[in-house]
Image 1: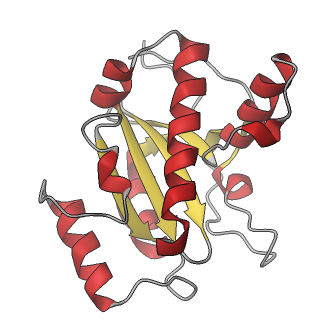
Image 2: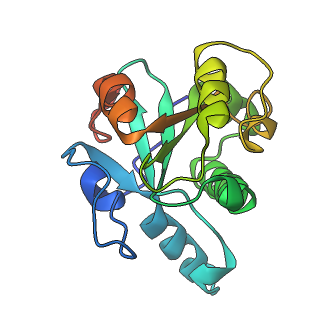
Length: 181
């Protein structure tokens, strides 16, 4: 799958900014697509308010020729599950429309990553065990309603705290503008 350059290039750090807590969730200078900005432009070109759609924070290219949609949550995740699912749905619709791709493309080539802050989340120890099991295998585990999109709309759903994201996902990513052609 070859998504064209969506524009709106930013650093991953900038897309991770949480204005409610005035902090960044990563210091990575990796160049990614700021998908909030893509959504805003997309909706405005349709003559609609950007408030009519939701979006993930970043769209990144993997060294493995996969693409990654990244959502940073610096607060409660379980109570925001429905909103996160809306962000995935709307982002996929916008992405597929702009790139002339189908859900088959995203199902085979797109990974959704939810990055959370351990110190601010509502995950308990059982939740964290379930997340770890689901991240490691194809165990059927309700990842806070995110399991609904895995396999049907995206290849995989991964949930990591900030430190795991830095060690397990960041090394797999490359600057968005670097073509795999």
